[in-house]
Length: 318
Ligand SMILES: [Zn+2]
Image 1 (spheres, rainbow, N blue to C red):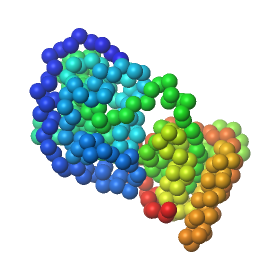
Image 2 (image 1 turned 135 degrees about the horizontal axis):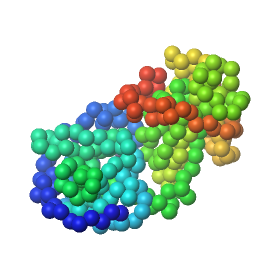
Image 3 (image 1 turned 45 degrees about the vertical axis):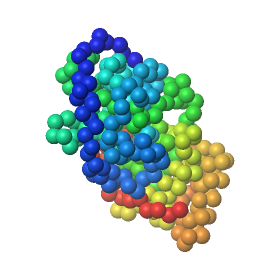
Image 4 (image 1 turned 90 degrees about the vertical axis):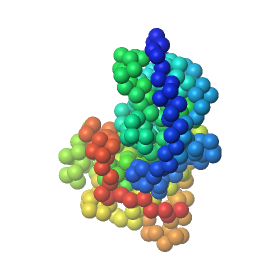
């Protein structure tokens, strides 16, 4: 929490945020309509979907100084750190910086301001203002409390759980896993092969036995291994052996690398369900071995490239 001397607050600008723009379907929303979001109350929907503004000085996080991470109410994507929050006295939570890649700026329907939305789900957050000189960064993200949830720093690690999936090119698997409700973080890497510190070039040479994989850290209070494993089966084709679309080779095999017996049992149950629906699933269910993080340029690939996966599409199967 930063405390800075108060500058003249542009509260009037904040209040005019009530402009009722009902263009709710941004491009991101359309892309994300197949993803599962948290259920919203009518009040939350009014702000997050229909872009209304909560009354100033009424939100839960306006004068909130706990250490931790602010996440999207609708999709749980991490958006802001408490270290970047400052007291603006404007009546809404104010941040002078965002978590990299978490916020998308779009011209507001009023033609003047810049609206900020969750880069993951497109949910409305508020507006961003520059040049007010509140803090050295000279930026104020003016965010509706109701668009946010808060994860205290003390519980962030204690409440997390992990799962590891391989399902073709790891760029595409990570793209979808990052967007799942309750997912705290993701990493792409290599698992299930021989040798230390495998490189992308080695893995691509089909000599190491490593699979491209995604390690998913999730909050078990908000989601379950079963929900994430279902999503895994729905974003790739688990009936393809050692390939995924145009990507051919055993590094593209479909596999769940379980970390405990419960995960193993759940994975096997889901395969039985899919088999009963006519899918001839070839997904391997094998114990996790060491996960080697992949080269930095493979992490968050589609987010960095502003692209969408060429080899993964969401298809409801459960
Ligand atoms: Zn979101």
